[in-house]
Length: 318
Image 1 (cartoon, rainbow, N blue to C red):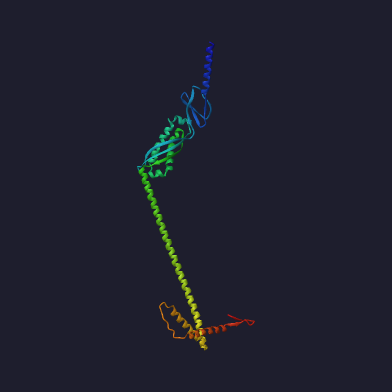
Image 2: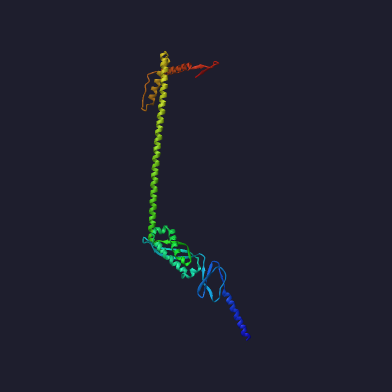
């Protein structure tokens, strides 16, 4: 009898320990557990320490409330313009209601995956190939709106859907490369033609400005030449007037001036002639020298007449 009592007490102690451990539930941060009583959902417990009734209540599902990522496998899609492309992506989702995620759908991740793949084909199939390659943001937004609306009854929030890769067939890629090269060649030809046109315009403007400056230079030179000839004519007229007055006054030196001047001009014309020439001078050199001497005497007389005297008796020549 004493041995039976010891065994009974030991069993009671072990059973008590099992009951205590079965009644204690600790929920980690980022998780929520659903509690079932006789197989029926009664409540959701949050992170922390909790007690349940052993053998009557039990943990139904353990749900992760942190944001999770789900890979979308590569699948082939036929676009609106009948191009076959391969696309894959990722889905980011978060469970907001543990009870709905546990009891509204069976195998939540598989349901989200199939729903995303189906809508991916639908969205991409309604667009052309060029739109697929250039409007990924629009594809992501449309997919997220559709999938998020469908998963709301499951207590799930779709945070992001990203298309990772869109791979057109090889022949389409080669055609796109040729098209891009042709477009770049076209732009290069246009830029080159515009450059040549601008260069021709600048060259023409430069020639125009050069011709204008040259014409202005010729006009200025002609004006200067005319002014010089006018001054030379005035000087010649003054000299002629002075000589005429001297001749009228009976001064023989004026006659010598005219004779010497014409003599020197005639010799200069003979010397500057480009043809070979032989000049006979039937005159004496002393006559020329005498004429030049007469010119010198004439200038001396003119200088004497222009001499004035300052106060103090010092002569001054103007």
